[in-house]
Structure formats: C-alpha cells, structure tokens
Image (tube, rainbow, N blue to C red):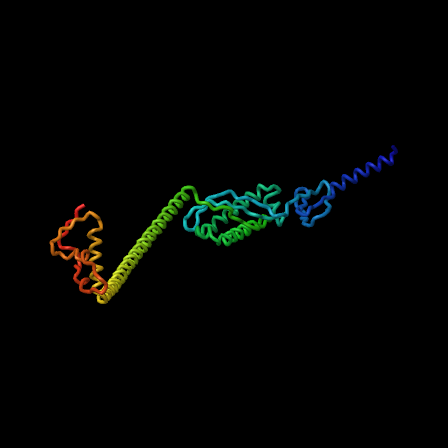
Length: 310
C-alpha cells in the first residue's frame, strides 16, 4: 500500500471525526442549548443539521413536547373548613431552554421539585377560598383554571409554561367519609319514613273514600231495590185485584184448590172436620160451568181445625 493511499485514508478518518464532532442534529420534538466550556452561548429551536465547535462546545437537548407531572396526593382545607385529599397532575412545556438550564440544570428532578412546590401551593391557595360544593360541581373547571394561571405565573422564571392543571380525584378523609355516609344514611331514612307516612295517609284516604262510596252505592241500591219491589208488589196487587174483580167465582174455586194442594200434598194427612164443615164441599159437589153460586159457596181457605200427622 502506497504512502499516498495511507495518507488519504488517514485524512478521511480525520475528516469523519471532525464532522462527527462539529455536526449534530436537532429532531422535531427537541430543542438544543449550546454550551462552550460549561457556559451557554446559544439556543437552537429549529430542527435539522447544525454546526458547533468540536471539543469546545456541547449540545444539550431538551424536549419541546407537552410533559406530564403527577402531584402527590395531599390533604387540603377548603374555605368551609372541610378537608379533602386532592390527587392532581400538571402538564407543562419547556419554552426557554437557557432559563431552564440556568434554574434547574439538565435533569428532570429539579423541575419536578419546583412543580410540586408551586402547584401544591397554588392548589392550597385557590381551594382555601372555595366551598366543597364548588369543587364537586361544574365550577371545578374554573377552579382548575385559577390554579393553572397561578402556577404558570410562578413557573415562568424557570423557563417552563404550565399548560394545564387537573384534579384527578377529590376524596374526603376516612373519618370524614364515615361521618358523611352516616348523615346521608340518616337523611335517606328520614326521607323514607316521610314517604311511608305520606303513603299510609294516602292509603287511609283512599280506603275512606272507597268505603264512603261503597256505603253510598249500597244505600242507593237498597233504596232502588225497595222502590222496585214496592212497584212490583203494587203491580202484583193491582193485577190480583183485577183478576178477582173479573171472575170472583173462579177465583174462589182456585183458592180452594190451592188449599187442597197444600193440605193433601204429603199424602198422609188426617183431617178432623165437623159434619157441617164446608172445606170438602167442593169435592163432593164440584162446580159446573156457569154455576157462580156453587163456586162462591166453596170455602175460601183451609178448615179451622186440622191435625196433620205423618
């Protein structure tokens, strides 16, 4: 191998090493801070290929995407002296790499500690002026907006913008939870007792109305039955009287035959009659058609003395 080829290869290696030391790439999701011997010199926000001095300058990368930080749950006293255990999280973005680097350095531990302190203090200040019902109602969005604005104002000095703060959960402490549940149970029992009392009252009222209507209906029905029975009896008497007035002899004979049927229906009846009794006269002298006197002479009823023996 000739010396020229070796020299060319050596020069190529040196160029590759210098290119690797001088050139660096910034991704779409990143931003870079260039430091020279530990001192920041410039910020690169545009993605692409960039140049730096080899061995002297260093590129430090920061994420430009939206980052999440979960705030540890903590107990907060509300404006109405209620206690809540609040579980929240924050979303932030690094907008000034230089200020961020000067405030907390490269790692995430420093910014997380600052966020924890700032968000926690803002949470306590805002919730300390709010009622429990506001936190648990549709006003929670307004409350989280106030916490976000206060946190964002304090975090600007660290090169960070707080985009959002959310309350994931807001629970009562265990002892308060039991007390609230006991009050809720007693309230539900009171409502249930009131509902049962109102139901019993409505039931008694309905029963009383039904009983009154039943009594009225029975009285009206009885009155109507008595009226109809009286009208029927009146028509029966009128019909009976009309029949008697048309043929008294026939009616007298028919009544006598009815008396015979009732007296001799059993077949074993014994009659004790006087010799001149007219009860059996119709049997010995049956009436003839047109003989009104004979029919009228027949007795109208059963004998005065009758002993029925089996």
